[in-house]
Image (cartoon, rainbow, N blue to C red; front, side, top):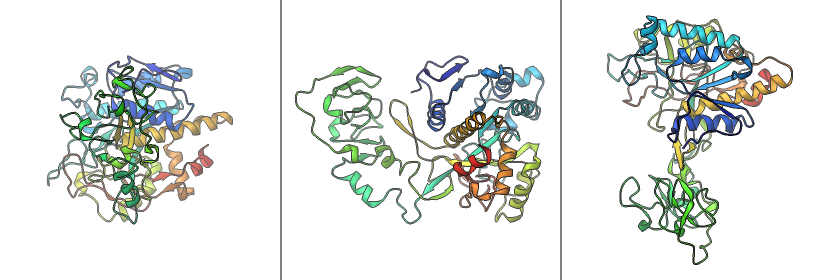
Length: 451
């Protein structure tokens, strides 16, 4: 899980010492994996976006982060109600309804942009239907916040598919995974196994378990003996010994009495990729990240409250005029802010939580784009330029002058949610659309304009 950050990460707020959660681990791992050598802060807040933005604005400039990645989203029209159903105390304390809460928080976001802070937010993982939409004729298109704020840069998700092969991995790769020199892959656990006797009898791992990463602990189970440890480089192995407990590699059992059998597992496809139908780069055709192929559908749509900013006018009007299929006009306000602004691949990521966890989401794409902007900021500061700050208007300007900076994604829709797949949502088109925004950035070209 998420360990207390060290080195170049500063904790702001009370650190959760419960082993962390997938969301936080994902953000830290991919933001810093993208923006290598960047100094980072890990913020925790008791309340929601208004308090976060206010505290950030009052943070001294030398301590204030230049780029902020926010992977949480909640119904824009339900900001005064928490996801658990309780009341948002800020609304009660200030006499806000959801519209006033959004407006007041947007003012804080606007202030931060003027201070040189770039706010990056995920577009949500439940398609156009969001938290409260359904697949009936009386549905709503539930916009998300802070995704729908005009003063954040919002990121959607795409996925890569193989153009000519319906299989997520090639037949040759699958053959290697299913037979020598690689053992079969247990599809539930993502683990290479050698014998069914190695697996605990209770679900979800009631078949083979031994994992090349976790020494027989691929699903959080202690391993029985050293033969479960198939990978000499496994972080939970101590010089070929088996970890007695998957969280403590210093306690070991059963000294090996014979040499481990040689294997060529290092040549095998990564088990998590075989299990999950490929890894993040396993494909050539970029489409909207959507159920049922993915475990999420990229969110997107139009704000319930915020008017469309001028820098979006041309691209949004074009979308409204050329889209092959729009939702009924009563379900969205076409004159309001459209989101997302850009997209990044958000399918088949691997997150380390004492084992590899396959993960999809705009929560994957958002920290990656934030990391890209952090690198561009570093380049700008090194050359004596100001920080990017509120970057969205610049992105639209760059796309207008040089469309090749963004790869257009024009296949897919966001009609599916975690509850159902219906016929209400938005379809990807040429140029901007409310699923993938301007498209996915060519970082090298983007750096030429913004670096």
